[in-house]
Image 1 (cartoon, one colour):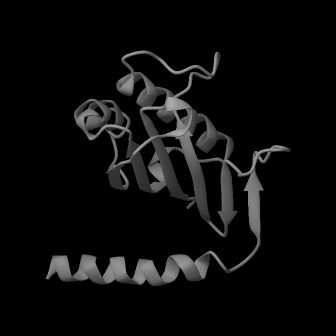
Image 2 (tube, rainbow, N blue to C red):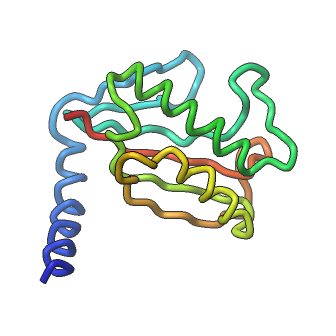
Length: 147
């Protein structure tokens, strides 16, 4: 019975999310001139956070031997963005993880999991892709809801 309830809730979300994306104004956060995307788009209380790669904040370079390091850089970057938006990782409800090599799943998962120790992690999809921008090993995006 619980599975049926969860499934029905999931189906309702599939219908509600596209409908919600059309209700109210779209507000871009941290949009920069010349950049073909916004780091965050807000529609109502839902925030669609663009994917981030694991370049360091200081040098914008990628680390060697790097899936865990890139994952930590990405997660810290999302923590900063969410803080600017008045939220934390607890507000995230959905994550999508793109890996250049699926063999890196365990290393990524260990680093990623460390950010969700005191509260439930969001739902997540992890996929392997043929390649990522700038030769990154990993890219992560989130959807967050501000309560």
